[in-house]
Image (cartoon, rainbow, N blue to C red; front, side, top):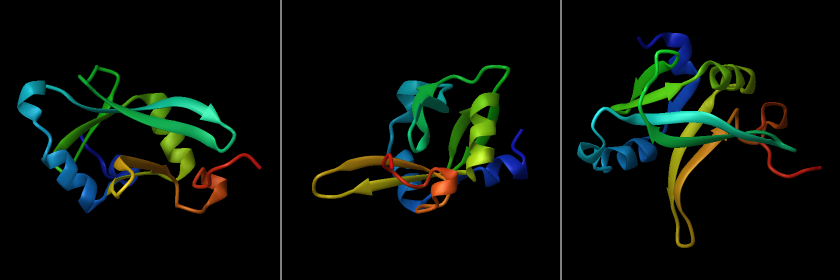
Length: 116
């Protein structure tokens, strides 16, 4: 079940909450959003997300009406990185979810981009 420490690791913005709410979940019965480490780069870990079903080893956190599954490795990365913020951007040239580890602009927690 959801606990306060886990929810502190995950922040869903209002824009992201609306975007998740507009998704047709009926076609994906029993699924939620898996958060996972998809790789390591020069500015730290890269977090990805995908539709998936929970396993017995996952921590399941519900926010914005959506179930998020987080495995132990990803939980540790989020904890070390200062948490994950999920936003949704809709601009002229780009549209989609924006996942930010740590505080934006905080290079110690992976909030900076670039190698240098």
